[in-house]
Length: 222
Image (cartoon, rainbow, N blue to C red; front, side, top):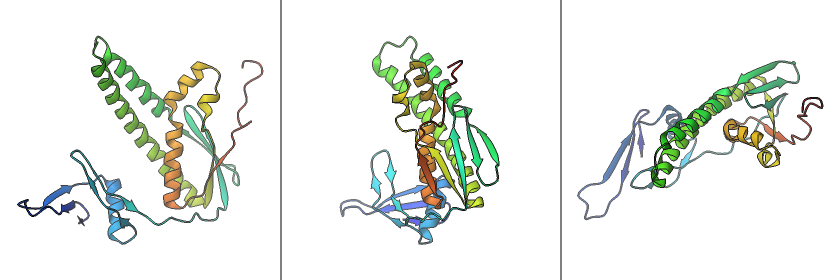
């Protein structure tokens, strides 16, 4: 494997019957380019690349980063259209608009229904649904990646730990079907997964706490 900072070149050995080696060249996305820069600098080791007719996987293993000792805490409340972050020591509060994730999900669901309209072949209907599902997941994941990086930078600048509610299984605990439907567009578990991955990579302390009693229903309107 050769990496010059712009182009990744992979040369695969072949059998004596083949006239020449298999050589593949790629121009990686800047996010992957940073990982390759770290590999070339000796900060990661490479596993065995896996080549298939349609893809290539190159595993890079980075040493585990030990989280720093936090001097402050940033509590994050995950709502349906925003994240509310609160710094306990200073009283600073920030609200991050996350309605884009739900908007994209709803948009692609509508597009999928429109694309399936009039099509009787189940295979074609599944293909339309799969395409919009893939686009939805990619857009939502990219959005949450940006939000997670912004929180990483904020926490690191304060030397703070991030604290979130552990929302695993929440959808199954909701009694009302319409509330469950809203969670299909929320994507907050994707965000929590991305945040946990970034925190492990950058050494930012991340804690999940029991969400019991952190939200209450209004006794008047429900």
